[in-house]
Image (tube, rainbow, N blue to C red; front, side, top):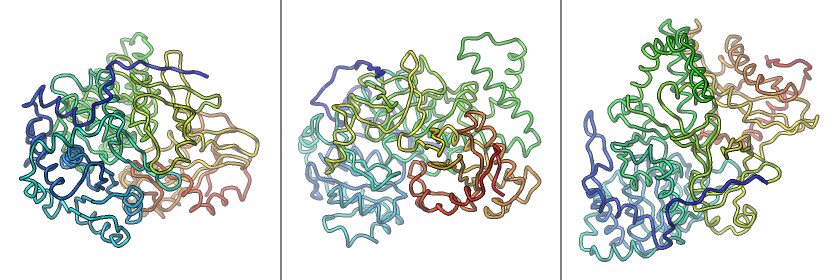
Length: 608
């Protein structure tokens, strides 16, 4: 059994809780701009001291409204400054937040609230309130509902004006490290979501150690980031609290369609994103270049960037000719992409899904080092991450300080340490099933290199075994195909079947540009595009590229392009845009069956 364990850098403090991170920050740098909020065409800074004052004022309102220490409070909202304000106000009141994804259906909202035992809910937008209203009659424990769009946060602040500072100080100090800090429900890619009990120590110890491991990213003067992925997810929640501890200025942009203008004005030094965002940036740039008659230049620039980065990573010498080409493409292509991201981005932290070496090397040559990491809700987000001082593209890095990683005999990744959750809420059977002693069994499969850098190779439950007995990890095929600009999502099929096939959807955002660039009608429907020969040929090209990564027995022989998209609303994607494989296999069982109705003996045959 291969095992790597990294000792904690910061001594543990079993009495500390999350509120201490803000109190310490205010004592150290009260006038530091800890947040910036949109103000006209620019941004207005909010200091650590001002944020602290607002947190206490809102916490007083919650106390005056009857929230008691240990009470569960549901919260459904977008990624804005108010999200973290509410988060810390609940901490300071001694209560426990139950975050709810802003895209959750009424049934999902009802489950999170009912299972957690929440007694109050805060919602941001009218749409959020409307979905809550649909199931309000099913939630007898809910005593209070506060609607931010009706000014209820301001009303709470006014209501709490007579609550003393001493009462808030008493309440914020009630929890110690072993106590529950938050109850986060898994995104539910399989089965009903389970509540993960994350403790104060999970956050405090992991954040204190991570800030040291990532000091070049978060502890440099002027460090800033623009959050746009949902703060209801542990990945962004972890970063938002880490930023407070480390003194990083944080802005928010909940509308990803406005992301580029926001990046241009905020000018962050690092980003937090999922791989799909990096794919979109690359594909949009490629298709824009294609539309302007510069597609050939962009592809040559991309090829040079990737080869340049590979040579640098391997310690090789950059040939003189490549240096000349790189300088030219830097002026023509790379500099424009850097400017589009605000011009100051040096690092990007990527997680939630594999990034792939191609994008890692491309952005590295742009001057943006993508630090790919790995973790789950159950590990308070990161368990491993590449470091600014040493990163290996294609891996998810080494274990963070205070964390141990081992591989079971079947390759399953197991984690223990300061970041591993306490238990599944009210579910001792699931808790027992997921632990081997103090090691959390992730269900993911991976490999280590000699220096302890981890590579994710697949999901244990998703490994396909063909009728011929060949084990196939879907991600090895799916990730390269999904990198194609017109591909939305991919699900590889073939368990107990004679060969590997795939269900593929198209990307409705990128498709019109690609169609126009290829002399086709930009307003072609998804249904028509799914049957179009040129579209089929482009998807076939993506499949051919993916097949080069595997043996013939593992290669995709047939694929079907579906005339629809998989979305969170359709029930086929989780809030972090991961595919719900079991739901897709159920809903599209007829399409899977059709792939195998006519046997094939040749490789790379598309289904017409």
